[in-house]
Amino acid sequence: MECVPVLPDSLVLEIFLRLPHDAVLKAGLTCRQWLAVSRDEFLWRELFYSYYRIPRSVPRHPAAVSWYREFRRLFDCIPCVEVQTLREHTDQVLHLAFSHRGHRFSSCSKDCTVKLWDTERQDGNISMVHSSSMRQFNWGYTQFSQFNADDTLLLVSGVYLGPHHSSSGEIAVISLENYTLLSRVRNKPYDVFGCWLNETHLISGNLHWIGNMTSCSVLWLNKAFQDVESENVNVVKRLFKIQNINASTIRTVMVAHCRRHDNPDLLLDYEAQSQARRMKGQQQQHHQPLLFDLGTSGSEEEDEEEEDKERQKEARCHGVSSARISQPTISGLEQVIQSRKNVEPSELEIETQVAQMMGRVYTKAPASSLIEPSDPDEDKTYLLFTTGSLTYSPHQIGIKRIKPDQMTTSGPVLGEERSSDEFFDSLDHVIDIHGHIIGMGLSPDHRYLYVNSRAWPAGCVISDPMSPPPIAEEIDLHVIDLKSLREERRSLRAHRAFTPNDECFFIFLDVSRDFVASGAEDKHGYIWDRHYNICLARLAHDDVVNSVAFSPADQELLLSASDDSTIKVWRSPRMVRLSQTPSRPPRPRNLLSSWMSRNKNSTSAGSVNGKP
Image (tube, rainbow, N blue to C red):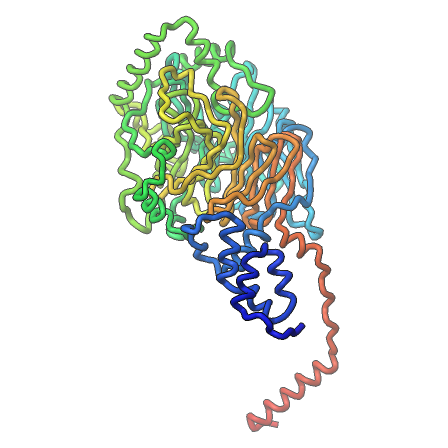
């Protein structure tokens, strides 16, 4: 429609600046003049900052083409529309994991099954393709799963009840070709979860108590095909042995392949921004994780006889909670509580001092600093896990580099450290979160680590390791740069949790190229934009949301799992519209006219070349 330009463009722009974005778009359909003004970059910059309430000091995403398209991306490409609800599980759904291709995903549940789902059906719906029950192996429930790099094997972690109902876990490896069980590996405590190191090797844990509040965590490398290996070939090898003090243990292991750091998926210069904030004094010290080298980490060697005694003692005092998946504070806590009953506090303090002294004497020196310049062509692999030094609740992130010669089980099973005075491994770096860690997730490029935590009060002092500080209901989502090993952004907030310290459980989060999502105890999942640090959507469930997962092939597809026994499928408004748009029928082709046209062109070409 054409109209007489009664108003100048500048006046129309002033009017549009006072309208909401949807009214601007409708007004742009009036005439060409208003359409041109409704696409003005200055207009959409103002609408962008006002609508999303973003500080104007935050620049536009470097990959954005225009303010209008950036506004539309955040408004139209967020997976916030519920399109399907999967109800095949009969109990709380605890974890979701996509394959690397995005064509399948797995789910774990309190019903003790692991289920596989197909996401590539022609009708766009998701359907279950396989379900395996682990009760035949005396599992209490499945809690975590992960596809290997080529999507041929599935790692499934669960709580293994065992003959003594201990808190041990177990890891099973399932072939995705024929769904057969290839191997089972002990995993203690169960909240180590386990993870893949590469296509054929996985990492598990073991725990040995060597005092009332002192223990030793051993991390093992396991070959996935243990049932077909020759008896002369190692299928297991010890990676690291680390001392734990003050009732803490190593939990939640994951692997970061840092060869991807040269091409980060987040284009904003985090380091420059954080440096500017520090100069302005905008960061509060008690919210910023501390970075320090840990030079004391180790424990006494424990023989098999002592381990058997520990197992018998554990069988009398351990029990696995049937309520829900507990945070590691439960899995080894009864051991400490029972051992403390007849011990004076002064004796426990002496034990901690002795353990620290033993660590200084019998621990290997830490490796060179992880942030020092190195060969740019060198691939670095980091093992990340939660740990602690002040109390049993996990409040630190440990980082240990895995060297190339440690990537396989070939060679000595235990190495030469048994005959050495330095037979304990120190951590290369530790990052203190100053709060209870309840979730971790890596960005697709493995450059950034996102951490869910519930903060301790500022300035709190921990005098008793068994009495950690109270934790906040608000969940902080920290962002840590694994290249500089610093927290590079202010914490994201919106989600909440309500359970106390000794009942905290893991809430799984996931990160895509542009977004980060997390579950929460307030019956919602949440989605944030990684660049602008803003919460974009809340995903409703009827109970606690335990896990979320983006499709690696399409970040506009998101899954959420809840205690309400359902898995919800969420897609973006844009994708929903596209799926509802009827496809255009193919244009009929006139074969005769097409043949005559080609024949005519061939004749003309022959004449030009001087040939008949």
